[in-house]
Image 1 (spheres, one colour):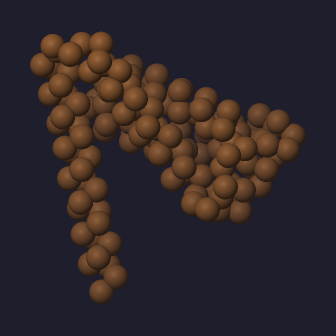
Image 2 (cartoon, helix red, strand yellow):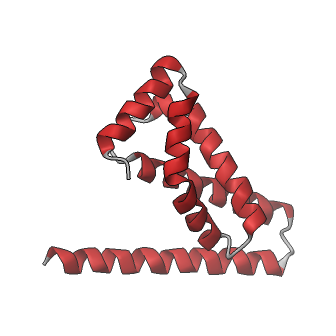
Length: 129
């Protein structure tokens, strides 16, 4: 597992020297977890998960200069992944407004994520006391 300082060093190498091997190290570190996260969001759709993961890493690489280092790289990366997923679902809903199946998938996925966030917040409150 990379420490925050290791992440920052790798990101600095990517930004300063266009070191793709440094970014490859970040991809290797977070690829499996990111794919599990996306697989959960897509309700097991492996093809969609692969597409979203690829888009996420591409956007992350192209946006590395905007990474401020206030949070961990993993947090930033997962936020990009969630935004990619949400954009995909929004486009899908616009393209197929009459499709009940896709609305159900989107609604159940969002409800699942909201419930998961609520549980995480509750656990944090319990851990603080």
